[in-house]
Every structure is written in C-alpha cells, then in structure tokens.
Length: 98
Image (cartoon, rainbow, N blue to C red):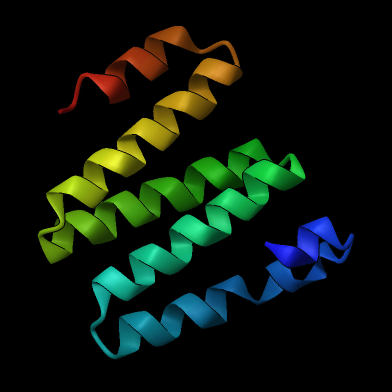
C-alpha cells in the first residue's frame, strides 16, 4: 500500500508472480490475503476494475480454503466498490450472497 501513498505504483506489476508463489505452495488463504491487500491498494490508487478482479480472486481462494468469513468480507468489498461505481444491482447481488 505504501507504494501508492509514496506515488510509486509500479510495484503493482509484480502481483501475478507474487500470487503464483502462494498457489504453487497450496496456500489459498495466504494468496487470498495477498489479493485482498493488492485490491485495497488498487482501490486507494483509483483502479476500481483491477480491485474488483483481485477481490473476486481473493473471494474464490477463500472459498477454496474454507474461509467463509473471509469470503463474506470479500463479497462486502466487491459490493462496496460496485455501489461506489453506481452499480446498485451488482452491489445488491454480492451483498445478498451471505
């Protein structure tokens, strides 16, 4: 997150390789946490579409790892971004998954 605050968002380009490490070792929960942080950075930096992609990937990883609370949190994050973008129907869909 600090790369965004410091005006150095080029760190974002390394995301795919970093997430792949978690997938390689079978750590869905760790990968989901990484994706959540990455999505949060993108939201702070103004990249809503990429944030949605990362929150959704994190939600899927949390479902795979059995983390129902984490999956619900990601659904809330997705709904919040969709709501901010004016997609109230999409936001309602994600907020009703619980």
